[in-house]
Amino acid sequence: MMELDLSGFESCPLFPGGVVADHGENPLAAASFQLPACSDFDGFQKDAIQMTKPAKGTTTLAFVFKEGVIVAADSRATMGGYISSQSVKKIVEINPHMLGTIAGGAADCQFWHRNLGIKCRLHELANKRRISVTGASKLLANILYSYKGMGLSVGTMIAGWDEKGPGLYYVDNEGGRLKGTRFSVGSGSPYAYGVLDSGYQFNMSVEEAAELARRAIYHATFHDGASGGVASVYHVGPQGWKKLSGDDVGELHYKYYPMILTPTEQEMADTSAA
Amino acid sequence: MECVFGLVGDGFALVAADSSAVNSILVHKSNEDKIMILDSHKLLGASGEAGDRVQFTEYIQKNVHLYEFRNGIPLSTAAAANFTRGELAQALRKDMDNHLERSELKSLDLTPISVGIITSKFVVTTILAPSVGTAQPKGCIGNGRDSSIAGYDKDIGPSLYYIDYIATLHKVDKGAFGYGSFFSLSMMDRHYHSGMSLKEAVDLVDKCIVEIRTRLVVSPPNFVIKIVDKDGAKEYAWRETIKDAEEPTA
Image (cartoon, rainbow over all chains, first blue to last red; front, side, top):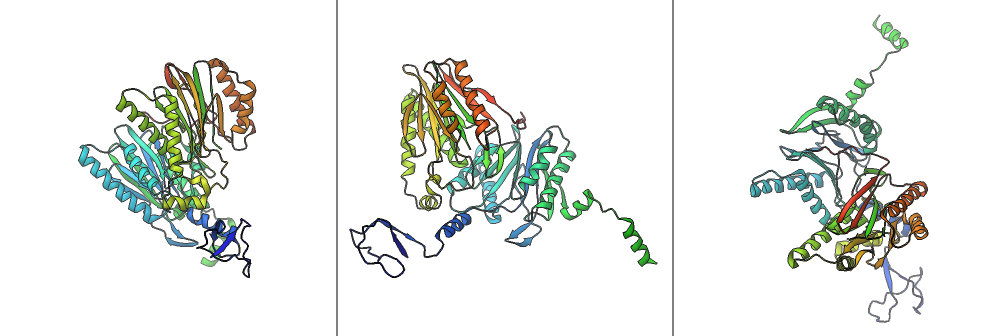
């Protein structure tokens, strides 16, 4: 390890390379701290900080409306530039009345959602009533806060219907917890927000809301490389959650923007048939 | 990008804070209430990272309540402010392994507590929030996570305490934190005088909000104003330019 002596007190001759001799036992040693041995320390530091920032390559969204909560997500998993799966389940069922979404590390999200489900069930058994969405999200937020800075990557939304009606919370690995009516999480979220914000109305029917969610996911998958696969849409109502649809976004593309054959193409088709 | 500022008036304290919850370039929410009501006559305004701010202010709030339950009388503003400062100072000096690693990488900004609290029992509580939920590590210490504690004591009247993210404590008449402080501090210096009426104080706060909106490059769209007076701590007004969707009532 290099030792960088900034005090100027050291009178030892410098080793080749400008490194001061290691004098761990010397009580008069000048204050110094060890640096990693590399040529570009600033770049290294930047990379190191970048490594701790979890990247959430996905698009998930949820919003509250008159009839409850709509939760939607894509289903693509990427490892760098490689698409490792097109059929990841990003909406997890915590209990029959609560859904959670996955963004970030799949393992982290799946494990902690399962853990949250356990805690919710224990709460039901101990208190003889279902846990509220507020309580469930606070449980998860406190757990994630206690692991803050340790590299967990969780960007999740907890959606459910409890005694107070529909509830939606955003919880992330920084320990943040926000109550809201519209959230989108992941790398594709800015694209989804655009469609979601412009089309949102509180008084929508379930079909309209599901179509808005589907459309928002589709547009996000179109622009964001880390999102794709199947757009799943769930609805959480007073009776619990129900999966509404799961459409391949490639097929959605041609449904929203059907191909219009130009005359030339028609002719070519006729010629080859002839 | 978070702005909190506050001032002491004639028999009341006023705190204004922005209300956006932000994650790098994305605004998750524009009506997040960052001014916590500690008890009947105290406000705590805090700014800081998402998890830190809420966890720390709730911790202070619960401890203030605990004191009242145990001893039958509420804490004075000065006591609450000193308690908060003490907790902040303790947290900063905690030698938790993981926290050390964190702070090595992200410098002092990622201490377990990175909040600024303004409690004003009677005093305006301003809450400065450097940036809730920001993902970027802040290199420089001077990013202003401060807090103010404002409160009203029957014998003392309104008071405002400035506590910053490295646990400095000052009793002040007016304070401002965050990027907005660059604009509001001088405005308050110019127009503030002791014993301002509520109308004058709200006018000054509005002037500051307008100045922040005009001059700060990414200024928050909405602000919340809370006051503390002899009748208690309550929300006074919102100043909104963007209306978030209303939360549905049961």
